[in-house]
Length: 450
Image (cartoon, rainbow, N blue to C red; front, side, top):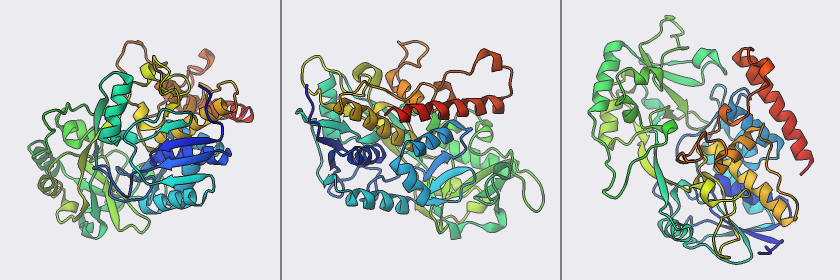
């Protein structure tokens, strides 16, 4: 099919959709950006803004020697739109990039509304549109039921789903500061980016037993719970053993009380949720407990005995496709007929997991589509970059066994080819630095050839 070279359609104004829309508009293409808000929201959404962050407010590490930090640096150098908006709305978070959600969403939406090549259409798209307009479906982990059903009908298989959970947010003034202290793990950042809630062994055991016996919001009869391993509910982690949380979200290592110098048995960290520091996110405490249970369980932590919840944790459905099976090397839908050859997918619906990865996916798919419209050879990001590694994940190239089940993933170092054998004996930090230098050098060459 010969695609229209002057116009594209993007469905969904989440992270991937907004990034793709901006990239295509700056490329000189007219963009029709469809977003069903404010007429309709998904169960996890609470605002009418574009690029709403429904889970954490953190984009995770900003250190290039961390895989997610490197992919952010690659996006900056590639002209990433959303990463620039995130820098404007950032709040203190150690070596992580965290943002004020509202300020971030406002920055994204105001720029898209001001872009002359972008036409915003506030309508729900319930079916794939088969025409000559290239269409990027970036409807995210909560694709509307009608559109998800039509997609499953078109691809000839049931839609795949896993479940994700979001953490509670509490009022900062309700934290008992006699039982809390400011510090960042290992003293990173400004040293006071996190508010820490320590527990003694007895207090932790009381918390643990309350947690594993707490009431939970149960899935409906037709739902098959399958959590993403990197974002497990805290009660799911607790079910794996009493010490699991001590090596996970409640680990005390790297945190000592600034006055006593003592290390607690367990520590729950709170991260600023907004610029003003009036709200805190319970780090690593995504949950599907009922609201009364959340109050009762977290009240076992001395600093949170009187915590006032601004948002309770909740469970929500994530929908994704078997991308290696149904998408080609440009993220275009593969069909047996000549129908829907104009359909592309980006973001979490393709099996990338996380805010940063969704943004990166929108950027990658936009670059691939630009090559198609320019009738140039397809040139994905180099495999030595984290952008390239994430792209190859969605292609299924990185699986040890091609028959293994395709599952969502964050960006990891495992997505990049290892360094030369002669350097294998170097320490971890030295090897990571070599990976970073190689990635940024290869990215520079790739961008020069775009």
